[in-house]
Length: 155
View (tube, rainbow, N blue to C red):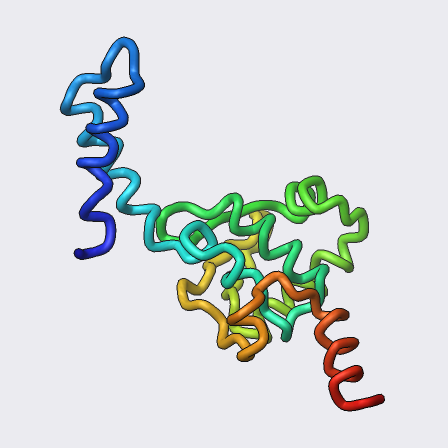
């Protein structure tokens, strides 16, 4: 089944069973078309896999989550450093800048720097290449990964 093909029938069924008053059929169809545009963003469809990138520091992963929360259906957004700071709790502009550069270097985002305007961020749609261990347990934290490998190697 092509991606998103089952969205409209599912929404119609939910509308019939749960909505009081029921939405008009055309409105449900419009919601389904809108949902199909968003379906292809991996930060929404596979969030654990998308954010479990052992190449990134925990700070960079947190900043990536913040940037993704502002992305449109094309994966583009324009949050200011202040908005990212407010969402992540990182007060230092240098922390945000360093994390954004780390995300760029890892190929997770592209940044178009603009004078006197917020930067434009584009999130890559592809999932990162995960280690075998992460594929089976994507919630493994980076520090636990290192610790577990040390135990396995007898260090």
